[in-house]
Image 1: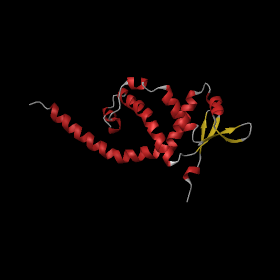
Image 2 (image 1 turned 180 degrees about the vertical axis):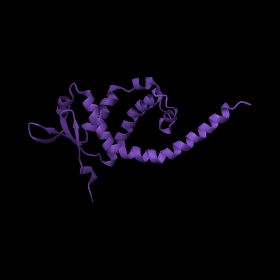
Image 3 (image 1 turned 120 degrees about the vertical axis):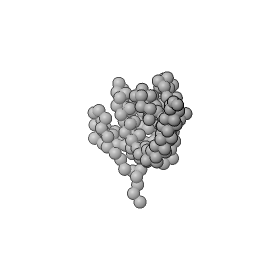
Image 4 (image 1 turned 90 degrees about the horizontal axis):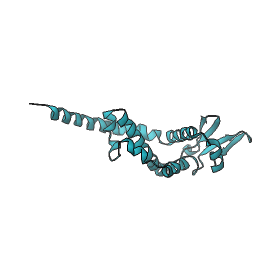
Length: 167
């Protein structure tokens, strides 16, 4: 059996090279909840700001505050926990150490050194880790829920048309 957990993806962020490995299934499930709790308000706020009614009405935003104030409720503690889960806690990220000429696991010290004054790089690495671990879910979910969205949207537009008709 091929070991998917052992396959590593090469990623370059700024002047650093990383190797990232997928999470195990249970870890991915746990982390996905944290990813969703931070990303859904961000995506929802972007949808509202873009005036895209179709995006705002998607079921994935049911129960999510879709306003710019929801962004203010994303706190540093939750964000720090998520970044730590993605990069540090599961030994799934290694960086190329130029002094040793080999890849080493990212520890707290290396993390602090690499991303000191480079917050954008940290978020870029997190985005790559999220893509590696969860892009299949989003692709499959859009296929699965896309049909439901079309049915829901079609039903709501029929209701809208009939409610705006004047006699």
